[in-house]
Length: 283
Image 1 (tube, rainbow, N blue to C red):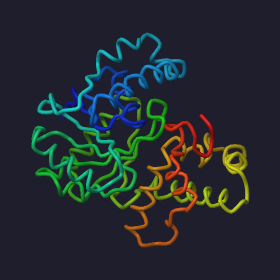
Image 2: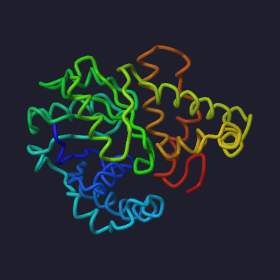
Image 3: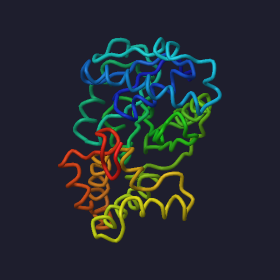
């Protein structure tokens, strides 16, 4: 299948990055969220982020912000969804919200539209069961920050068609990315591992073993990671990390996924990380 037009649902940190990355490679994008205020903020974020990414990616040298914005249609509705070849969904990690969305999408999209679920932990198989064509549903777990990451975790649900897997891998190549195909299990590979070390890092701060700076330095200077677990949690959003841990705990009933109380306290206090200006670090 030849992917030409893409809808991105969810104009938060991940969704805006995905839309920006797609537009920079020439794809027409429909960026949808709940209201125009969110979309206006997304437009401002895209302008700000593009300046940074342009300095870091030589392939963007000749691309302007006007080129990017000309490719993106901002909408709070479903206009144009009947013609999109792929939907990349990035909404909150809440099952009821996803259930409502996919039941709506099944009524407005083409029968051959591919649904790429950019989720941290929720089952691709379970989402596929909501649609009339579960073979078109596949996980596409993009990494933060999307324009700079070359790997996408591609998750094959129980009903995902091999043609869908092949189309996704070829599509990702057009973005300069490699799709690593894994099977559907809550958390898949990336988040099943990464949320353990983000959660344990929060416990280290809570227990007074070390401060956020010291914890992350062990990872960046000691283990060679580009970003420490607490800075990563701030980038993702601590509220998203907490919701993902809740999904993992519910799915496996394993105490190793028990959410650190400090994480919950910070979310209750509105300290969500980069998107709120403060989390484990100040922004």
